[in-house]
Image 1 (spheres, rainbow, N blue to C red):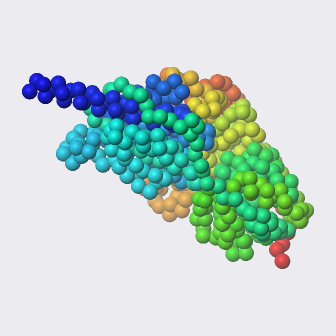
Image 2 (tube, rainbow, N blue to C red; image 1 turned 120 degrees about the vertical axis):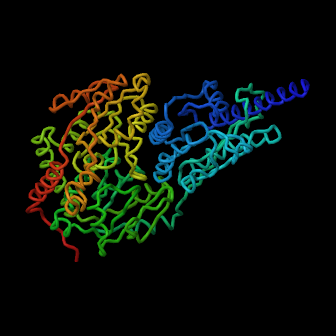
Image 3 (tube, one colour; image 1 turned 180 degrees about the vertical axis):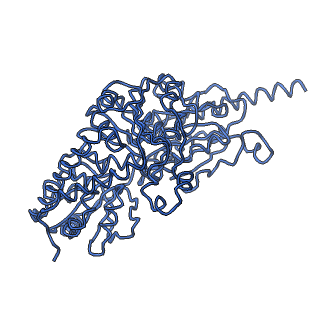
Length: 574
């Protein structure tokens, strides 16, 4: 019995060394392919891979106290860098907390390597602790899902190929999340031996769609109309935006694509004016990338007389209204070549009307926001984002904050706007900003509502120890403000509406932030708010507003724009 025990002990430690070698090989190959950032949630079962990451000097490893924060931080880092980021957790329900970020990565086309440690197969269906069925956990939300089983030396020659396939699937077309489920047996701590031989220069071939000369010329002819309109969202190449503007195209740009000062930013208010919206119908509407948040724009562009083309660089479909007549999938280079060769046939009055309308809308909105001070969220958000340094990134929550920025903030100069608009969820906003800051450095502004802050308050943990310049603005209207814009606000009894949709919470966010050691203050004047945006973080600033008043302010702003458009020379479609 003693001999058998010793042999078992030696075999188990040899198996631990195999697991360590397997993980060290994955980590080495990933690093050789340029993946070198990992977000890790604590746990025991993930020890073999966590140790391999921590012991490889090429990797930067950040720890997060909960899995959801880790996953959204990885999402933010990938969004900012454009390269896959790895996120790792232990076994059991820990893996389920990755799901929201995986869904967002799927719908936003963001590369992500999701690694879940698992118990070995013999632990399934026997009541073992921290054991659930993890293989295929994320369903169709991932580009590829794989469980290679517990590592053995008999398949060591496949390890580097596995690592390459994970990265290749994540950065393919379209990019997105990949799930690698890795079961490990105890003991979990081993010593890696010599790694399998690596190729001299690992590379990945990612497919690209190229238009031949005939297709290029055919596409140019299709776009050569007198009244074209370009709507750009995330994924639209800057070169294409510049070329379109140079050729007289009005370009309607949502907040994540406003690097060029010539774009139209206040299109939501402009298109609420019935006269302007009726007169400015284009011959052809071309959409590139993801859709803006504006329902007004979507409804206007869905009119029967408007022909629509959607151009995608990765094959993803954006056609929620089922009005796209033609889909073009091509490369950024070829798309730029199409616009570079367009003839200048656009009507001068078509372009000038859009530009003059934008100028008038911008003037009245800026004047009104100055008058409002910090009485409502829209003015607070605008004041905050424009006070941030011009080299800032700004991570904006879905719901009302992204609409405040898109509809009313206007041009944002050199600032980069990031928002999780794949699934349009409000979870993980602060964690996403942490990931962006880990890639870019600072400063990074964060704009979110109180409910979004509640969802992600765990990301405040250890924030001061990360050395990041995060400047956080919380618009606190004590509940769900966006629901006041929906039909329920006028059709449901006030008491029931407040319970189901208002959802007041009474949280003191200043106290909450200070409990985590974060500098925090409640402000009620623009000077203090701008100072908070200008000073180094981490910091959290709270502005308290009224939900009902916000609705009226939006109506007032749109009305003022409509008045400002009076007398603008119109164009009618014949």
